[in-house]
Length: 557
Ligand SMILES: *Cc1c(COP(=O)(O)O)cnc(C)c1O
Image 1: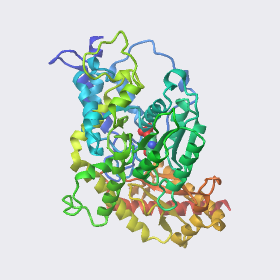
Image 2: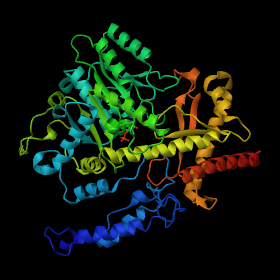
Image 3: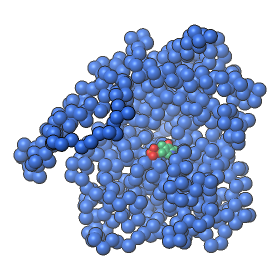
Image 4: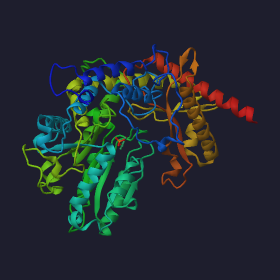
């Protein structure tokens, strides 16, 4: 049994060190040998889980060797998307950086529990220092700010809602939520608003969704003002207004400063606390690293086309300064492993005292920092805080700037290439984010004109829906190709995805018509191995998939 656990002492033959070394080498064998290989691990792309019988499993009678078990573990990775592969561009799923992966693994070896000081000891530096660095980037007084690592961007949303409800409905911690306070966010806010309002007991019907601007996809300030005015007149308290920064597909940023002004203009009725302003910046946060970048001297040598994108993104994200709190997903645009999200708040004293509970009798405060008094979770793994902190330490301003700017160089190249194909149209040309959304039309189409009509003219509704179906079929074909290891021009096809409605048609701003929305193929080139040649190949594959769909449709007729 002793050899089944890591040795507590130095110098002995250690099953853990050997096991990890061997396991990583075995895992690496699942990577493709050369660049042309498929974007999944191993050789078998099929789902091999026996879904009919898997739950009939029972505990085995005998002990196995850890070697055997690790072999079984490695088998489970067969077929998994290879996130670092240059052909993986399906979503905001980057490969973790080496420092962050190692930091996360180490925190599994000697498991600190970051619920309180005694069990975390110096490991708490990771959470505390992350809070300081992120608050400084936001332009806040870092000594008065703080952060808690939690279970994702959705956890950050939930934290904000708890904070808001506690502030606005002071009785709610003991008496429960008895008032229909409202949570206001844009039509393009992330669907996790449903999770948070549901689980927090506020109820999903208490979300008010603000229309978005036809061109920028950002929250419409006139509509927001109407809603806030209306709540004020009817004496309905507003728990929070959420600015999404950026939205997942359209990369839209809501104007935080203007939202702040409106919150000040329409305060909650007497007896309720002040409306909270939260930035759901879990995707867009990392643009803040351009804070110290001199766009004129441009020391990192970004192209003239990319420079304005960087500046625009920085100018949009710096609005988090006006928020009470913002969310950070290191596992998205921080290139870290899951789950490494943190909820950053401006006023630590307020947040931590509003949510504070007494110290439980069986834990003694051995350090000045004991977040268990106000966190949602009790035991908290250090993996996320270690991954996030290691990433901040590893990249610094310049590392983040290089990775983000490099991705934009690829994106700008891709957009230029799209413009060369009459049957392709980029449908998010005016957003400055990392994702490119593209629609493909039948051969001989003028995609730009057709899309323009479908977007704005209700007379083209039928065509819009028809071409949405085409987009979906192309997306599914590409997925099947990726999964079957198909090659085009000797190279495997990319792993892409598609959006079934990243925005509404212009005449459907109220979203009354579920079908009058824009589908698009999604190209999210989020890793550092991607090159312009890979982008050229991606477009050829999209066109080939369209031809395949058309061919199959003809055969059906
Ligand atoms: C991804 C995302 C979320 C959810 O975050 P998880 O880390 O997946 O829990 C919330 N909001 C936005 C804008 C997102 O992009």
